Image 1 (tube, helix red, strand yellow):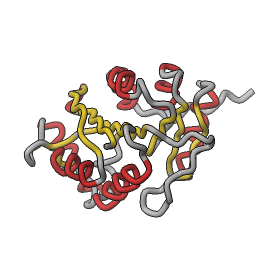
Image 2 (cartoon, one colour; image 1 turned 180 degrees about the horizontal axis):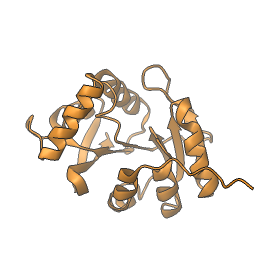
Image 3 (cartoon, one colour; image 1 turned 180 degrees about the vertical axis):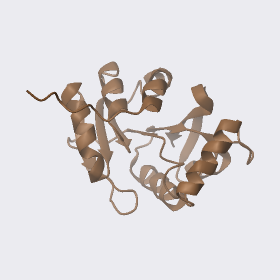
Length: 205
């Protein structure tokens, strides 16, 4: 009998989910329906959903990543976890919630430095348009401050990103917060994370 194929695995995702949860536990305390933009391997969703049982956790990503996400859901499912919706920042409309309740929270991890800046701008535009007043947008990843890298490892990571894709790279905290303000969201928290990352929490006006 063939053994099942190993689940797609990200060590970085495994390392950071505990500290991220500590922020989300508070940031999403009054929320009910979360859209995760860019669910990747699916590891974050199966970690957060059962630990935030008051939420419905809706995954989303490019179609090519759905099999990996679903494999994690099959192995570590939770009653409040939802199968991935198709969502491409370059072209998709805002995903429709699979229930009457709209998304009142959005979470995204390690996307802002991977996608091109125009796609970051479009993500904030969509979130700003569709998140209700009082809704929460939480972002995890590395950021520069005052145009400066916060560590040599982030500098090296940025160089690797730009060599791989010139449109990617670590974003400036100030540009991100300005983009949020432009779309009706105010910074609530800037929390240091392990490995020179941050979790930023914004609230919709």
